[in-house]
Amino acid sequence: MQKLDNPFRKAGIILIVVGIIDICIMVYCIANDIAYSSSFNTFAVITGILLITGSEITARVVRWFSAFMVIAFIGMLFLSPIFIPIQLLITQTKLNPVGMLGSFAFSFMLIGILAWVYVQLSTPSALHKLRWAGYKTGKPKSALYVALGLIVLASAIFSFQLNGESAVKAKALVKEQLGNNMNIT
Image 1 (spheres, rainbow, N blue to C red):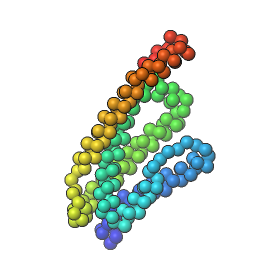
Image 2 (image 1 turned 180 degrees about the vertical axis):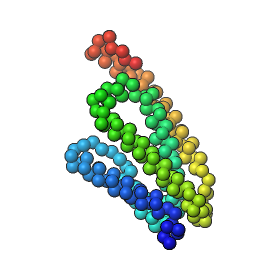
Image 3 (image 1 turned 60 degrees about the vertical axis):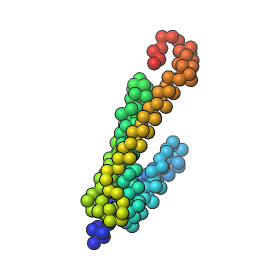
Image 4 (image 1 turned 45 degrees about the vertical axis):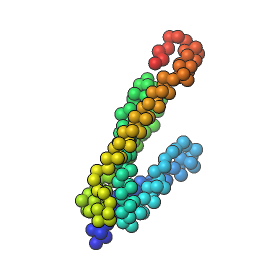
């Protein structure tokens, strides 16, 4: 009976599991002095608990943010080869293939989880519960617009940083130290 009353339950359980796994990874990294950053852990657990309790406002906010994050992450993944020189990516891959593969695998896994959460919170029963609570249930177009705006803003900032005065000075310094034979773009 609980499953019929609360269409947000599956998404809540998955968010709690993912949050706990992320907390465990964070603790492991701290214990072993490994760099780690994630703000997904505690928020995922708290959000999961609220979804399991059937909170419509939480479902509405999580649905919007999951749509936003999926669009933003996909956009940044597509833009990363533009802003990170291909030679640097190749060098990083040669020096740490497992780390690079893990980084991309983690990104795709996170996008998949967020997309799944969005789909779960967009099922007919979930939308019916949100509509019954008085919330709009259309596609979160504002999430698309905000994510695209963020991508454009990030592109402008990266472009400015890569072609600004500091970048010119850094390239000149590298050429001075390594010689003029280096191809620095």
